[in-house]
Length: 223
Image (tube, rainbow, N blue to C red; front, top):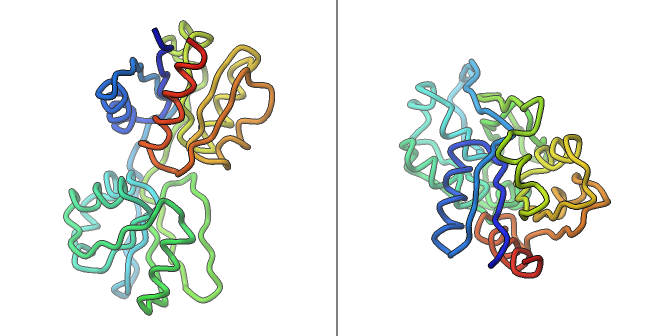
């Protein structure tokens, strides 16, 4: 019997990852380390040339102010963000491969010279030399102060999924890594987790599917 997965990402992503894991025959439990909430923001005075989203939560929590943007070209960092943008009503979506620099390169290819970046309070800045970025913070992710009980009780028996560098840093600050196995969504998230884990590996691509694939391998190795 393989080890279970411990999913730390915020909802609704946590439930989506749990469902995908269970569909592939893995056991998974959600214990989010963050709670997402919308924040007040304002539109620029002039209509934007295009919109940039580097997180699906921007589409989920941007609110009614996004209504006037839905016919503007939207550059989504990856499939998950594009899907949420589509559900929010955006109609002209260009989808990237999960890398922020790559999606900005697609905007550059299309002749875009200014992007309205709808992002979270805790985000990685995108600062290309030749495209102006107008950053608007539309949501925040509030961190827990202690590891959730669901995570604490199964910590050394599970493979822990780390969906971002911030989650990796927070998780590392809350546990002793010695007896814990982790799977990170990217090399950056793995680096952020630091050393000392019983086993640690990064996904080949920054997608949930790739993360679950490496996690499944670790689950079976550690069973």
